[in-house]
Image 1 (tube, rainbow, N blue to C red):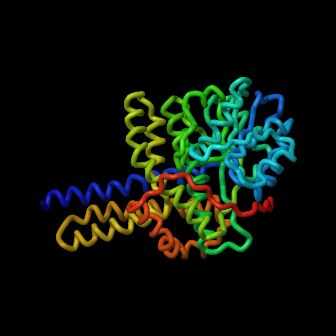
Image 2 (image 1 turned 90 degrees about the vertical axis):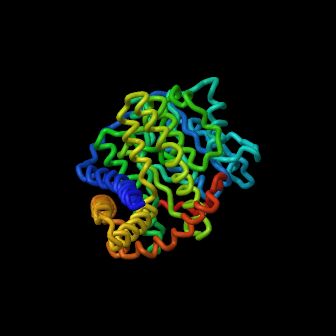
Image 3 (image 1 turned 60 degrees about the horizontal axis):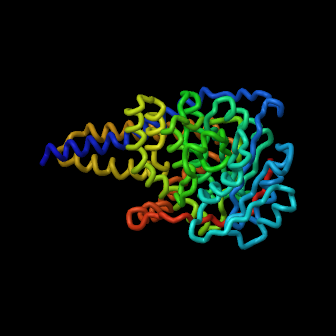
Length: 400
């Protein structure tokens, strides 16, 4: 029995050490990044279309379309899929001259089904490149060109930098949410980019060669369909790559219920994907003899940052207690190293990319942010979310 407890403590400590080390290495590698923006002209670009799935987006669709229209030669290149809409999304979109598809299917709900509908529409005259944009984003100038060019040259899925903009008067919770999002989507993806490794897909600002998208089906109600899409394509031989010079910006939801809905969907979906897809990626890496799939499995194995901190706190309490009862202190030492990697990694990311937007005092509020997240993770143990639920939108205000 004593031996089993020893083994269990060591296994527990290494299960926490691995994602902490992965995060630390990614954050450390991001320090060496320097932007090397190259000019891309329209003559370099193949034929492309932009798909925008939209479910009741009348409050935000205009800002999104305005940010894209100047980046295309014709409004018809933009296709808005008005998916089960009961508002003015379709009418507003039509005013901008873009192509509008209206889809009605209450049984099959979710972004994946909407995108599949858009792809079926294009089947008879497919473009070379498809770009997927959410209806609640601001698209930075030149982003569309860069995505199309990179995807065309590399013949792989390409993910733009996707960040969430803080509201004008952010609460401490908003600041920590923005920091966690920045670490995940900018710091870690930049580190992977520097290492030459693939990234996960973030949900918007994604470009795909048409032939690549034909390898899989988008029609599903998966609550993190974009993450699953990236994994499926990687296993088919088309691992997504990061394009740090292209940027898409959303905004943190300000309604408490909306923030909770969004976080629950993202994080429950992420946890379910870790449990089901990490073994699948590792198996694929062995069968296909591909190191990039190992890298993607390790990237996916890092849970949401707040949960990782909670797990570290819980396990180190367990190992310290066990050590006081006569068990080895080595698991506690291993967890101490893991905690140091976690803390330094986050500080590196904040110092390199977030210091100008997120004041240092906000880091002191992390414990309160963790308390706010506890019910979300407890709900995962009791009743994990499995149905797609749209997040209520705030108005996009672009201050760029």
